[in-house]
Length: 330
Image (cartoon, rainbow, N blue to C red):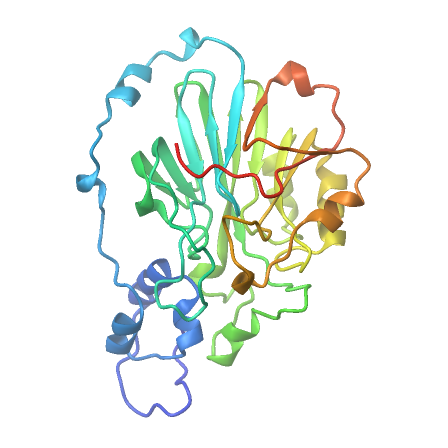
């Protein structure tokens, strides 16, 4: 994925349209940037082409969703179930049983960024799958069996006992850690910074309201969004934040500042090196050092976290750290 500038050594070739540019971004995340080519044919050779919906291959159907239609008032219990699949992938299940999967991961289809995930994402069944942005470690929406696909949703979605608000903003570009990954965008002629950034550096955060709990799925959002974004989030009870020891997305200080401003009851670190999920080739590190500096923290030994509004009402910025614990199946 590059803009209209030619990569070194290229003299001829068609320039991709914006639609083609964004399509290639959805297929390959940052991979095309690493390849550094503007030629449309070369892009299609080096990056996995957009193949369209794969829903017709799914063995299931929408019977579970049909059963939930109009059943919000009949939901039994008051628990929000959070299952962690590693990296930034979470499944939230509401009291009514509606399941949402956020940011399933895959490897870069071009291979340019190396083998981040030694195993495939487990093919699970969910009612809806959502992606925060078009990078390969967040957008494997075709790897799960989902009744609904809400890819980079902006605006409100309400169904059964859940309301999701997608707030459009931008991917972090500060690169506070030692690995200056954003330089790959610049090397091949693109401007990574708003308002001229390529589409793969957009980000949507999701505010999920269910079980009386407001959960903010951060994705890889920047640390300093404009005031209207903070206002759109409002009160946050559970916050996911991508902070690891390498400070790949957010630095420790940026993470602390976000937590201090939002004052969530629960904080869940994401986007860190995790045995059994991600590899050293990610350049990520564990999040232990950031967690250790927090006043209130818990190290979890189960990839499932069950929360209730009443159970967390007295919490104050309590860190729940999954560490190397992650779901590997259903």
